[in-house]
Length: 300
Length: 106
Ligand SMILES: Cc1ncc(C[n+]2csc(CCOP(=O)(O)OP(=O)(O)O)c2C)c(N)n1
Ligand code: SF4
Ligand code: SF4
Image 1 (tube, each protein chain N blue to C red):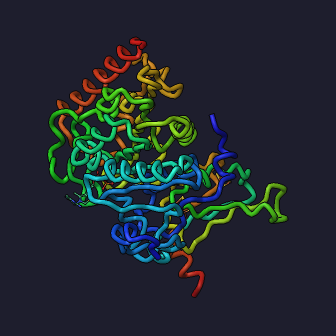
Image 2 (cartoon, protein in one colour):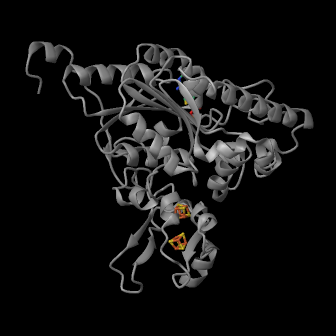
Image 3 (cartoon, rainbow over the protein chains, first blue to last red):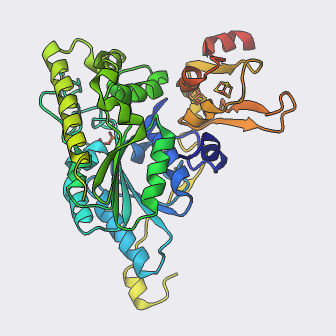
């Protein structure tokens, strides 16, 4: 795994004074991503918090070229960039599509699926604040059971889509999940993906103080609790073979997980939510573990 | 300038933003609490630099006050999120109300 020293020794790819909310983990996540991938990167960003926080024209906080693109089009525009680079023989440039969960799990799903099925050469990162944060925190297809958003005032009913598993069914060279609280794990996964050709997908959990209603200083702590309670499972699949990441391995045993309550107690979005919905979340988590661990037993 | 007729045909004019500090202005103005480091207790582990989302913390390795240097926060841009204070293993960053500094200035 990369060391903290190595992460900090590279130049800062995000410049301070951007428009992200105080404590925003999507800016932190992109900082880590660009540190991992280096300077030779072209990004596509659809409508999402990142398209806003990079700053208004004529300034940008992001030091690599960015194509700001329509909401559903992160993957399809990255396909175009990647095809153009190939036509020009520029094989050393990394194409990074960087989109929110709404832009990936819901509105962009068809274009990601198309790019994945064609195995277009890019890294696609869904940074997930588990809602449409930028437009005022509406429920997205990634909102977990019971979470309160402005469109689910009594708590989200039903289950989210597992976009990482949806992408896994596309037979991709690389699929992984990560969390902004664990930069070394995330950077390691990005570097692995960068060495491969084709469509690589990473689902990055990015806790959002505003949307989840916790104090901004708890951003890193809340992300760690998501992993320690088992609510967010860290895994990767190289050429289809799923494996739990070292950070999540011990939580395969439910007894080792912290109680879900520890994770939810910081989050205003779970305040006053019915016992039934919180139980539904726990059930959802346990079921996700069964799915991932069963799939991990299947080898190609 | 496009070289060929084909290139001219596919030429797209668009606005380009350039990388710049303070793309949203001096975001330090957003701050209600200011992180203040107790440099005597600080071990220069740089955890605060790792987790600052701005990022606006650096280490001045030339500073003579300590063999590893000195941690510096750029208050022009620090939004006062408090992540550095929360993550510091030494608990040597205090979040101090900005009004304290107003009084100090007066
Ligand atoms: C076709 C279309 N519909 C709606 C919008 C308005 N819109 C812009 S960003 C956004 C929410 C994005 O949510 P998500 O992808 O989860 O990213 P986040 O804001 O959470 O970072 C919406 C609804 C739009 N720009 N285009
Ligand atoms: S985290 Fe704390 S001890 Fe470590 S460098 Fe920062 S201020 Fe110093
Ligand atoms: S308060 Fe937040 S923005 Fe300011 S230095 Fe600490 S981590 Fe960075």
